[in-house]
Length: 201
Length: 201
DNA sequence: TATTGATAAGTACGACCGTTCGGTTTATAA
DNA sequence: TTATAAACCGAACGGTCGTACTTATCAATA
Image (cartoon, rainbow over all chains, first blue to last red; front, side, top):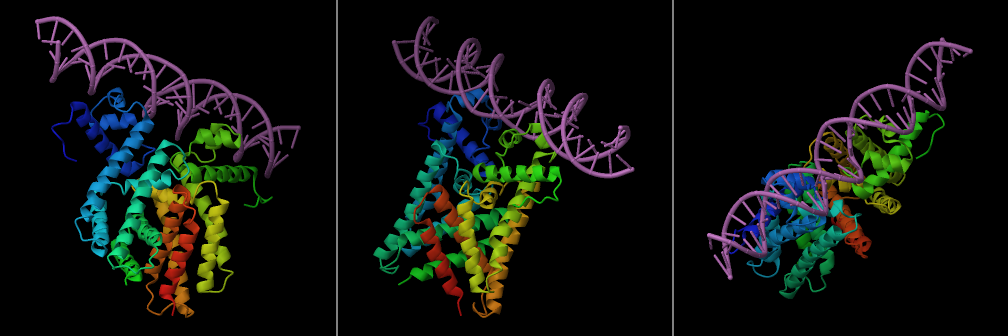
């Protein structure tokens, strides 16, 4: 995240807090994110930090916002530099790998939060669902483009593609993070490759 | 769970506690499982309940044990009544669907805990990894049997099959629970079907 | 230089956390 | 019947939690 000189001091602090909060969240989960501990980590008082958000729920949703823009900037947007169709989809996966590596602390915050909040209604869940929906829709859209440019078959079910595409990413996460399976990346690469093959013209 | 008359009073109580604890866990996660709240739910005092486990970590790992035997009894073992090979794999999926429905409260406790504890080392994580390893190995083994009986191609990479098989189940969980996607089951059924097709002789 | 408004710190509160302890009831066995 | 152990309770401990108030700091402006 670039520190803009145009930022007010408050905004800078907030940015710094959110960065630390996201780091913590990807490790311990959104629910375990505690204001006191976070304040200690960024060298602020609990109340000083609290003043930026005024509620824990607000802090949580803003962490999701922050993670989302981070994800969009590092995974989705850069892929747009690649040509439409298959190259763009492949770039997305490559960026995803890099993103997972970079956040070697804790895994994908969305994946973790998704299972954490699947039965916890509220503002956080709503936020989460919105972002996951957006992400999956971007996968659907990628497939549609691949159809448009003639890479994928005309009768491709793009929603179906997105489901399988994302499922494999979830599997990768679990094999890599929890099971510490050495071949996780290999397994995913091959699965992704075979998935693509199924839709090629 | 059958209440055996041979159970001592303590064992019966423990069983009842674990049942409630698993119910709670699948909804709110292992980390949010609180002794006080659990005691209230089963109508006991905090300390009375605590006496059965002597630590929260022990309670958590025993909930995992309980969930595992439950899963094995309801999903894996019944599938063994089906003929070896494809029918058995298909039965496993059907049992999985039924199991998800039955636990309509909260989703698969393992899936949730897997992402919750992927960066939280300790006894709970070790337990969890053990059970997930066992489960995935049972999928690998199912594929191996399918090869043995001539349903799957001789050169089938069974570990590869298990990765994709389980990934789709994770995707199903997320689409169904969090995204409340109506077509979740449909999407999974078709993905599973296509997956099987790839390995058929 | 004085004033103001934003930012952070300080302090306090009630709620809940896991855990310990001592005592009371209940079941088992001699 | 009596001795022993298990099961359970209520109260309390030290901590941490989120949140609400009040106070201090300090840059920008008047």
